[in-house]
Amino acid sequence: MRVCGIEIKGSEAILCLMSKDQGLFALPDCRLNRLALTQDYDAESVRKFQFAMKKLIEDYKIEHLIIKERPQKGKFAGGAVGFKIEAALQLIDTCPTTIMSGTAQKEQIKRHPLPVDFKATGLKAFQETAYITAYAFLTR
Image: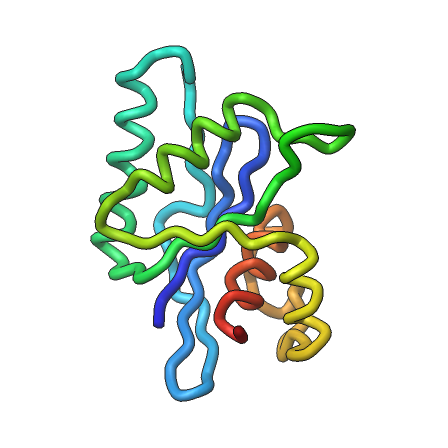
């Protein structure tokens, strides 16, 4: 199964592709490690963002999107643009989407510790949360 872990930060979706085949995890190369939604007030920009993500799903044969959940209110609440990004991703009809809470991720990591230290993966530092999100989903 090939999935895309996503962390939404500000006006960007930070991506990490991961696959699991016969118990082995792999991090396929991807042309994008982040996708920004510029001009969120413009419907055409939101469509372009959604189209770019849909094309990525198609090109890399992604079977599932996993988004790290963000609080809707409180000190660490996500912003309005982030929720537009989340909605645009959820409305892509060719790929199912799951929103995974931080608590669920921590439980999975506790049960199935990361097999490789993040620094050894070759991913960019800002992709760590997306990496953990994808791994936690694949170990359910």
